[in-house]
Length: 201
Figure 1: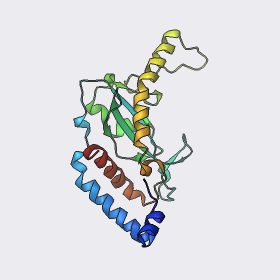
Figure 2: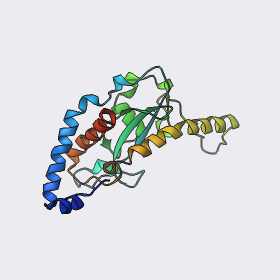
Figure 3: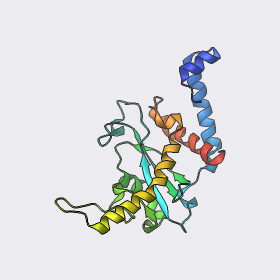
Figure 4: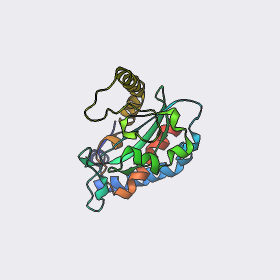
């Protein structure tokens, strides 16, 4: 069960600030200890079809971090890229980028296509223009052909497994609720979670 800091403080008879410091210490320890268990882009298999999608864990609205605000989603968050195989097994999860970062820009920022063949990656419309296999976008005032309709249905059917993988990832409380610790700690927190996922579970 995920406990908020206040609950932990009450159950252990200490202040919330003590719990906050303990969490920060343990999080850093986990991130550093398990870092080598976290897959890199070089570890992703290249002989199979892959799926990519972004997820946006919410963040606190820090005044000095305006780039966290996502106009598309209307709240502050970070952008995390997830790569799985077609059955939905995670092979790589990125460091966080500001929530204003579009998925296609995140693809470029992480240099993903330097390591992977874009023709073997299936994605949604957010990644159109990067050579990936994506749904067909219908031009304004035009109708989608039956072939395009079938293609899009097939893509959406295949992508269901990465949506399920991301939903499972967000069962981690820290990835589905607002991160209120300093923004500079977000990457360490994500790294600790990934270390547990890939190194322990």
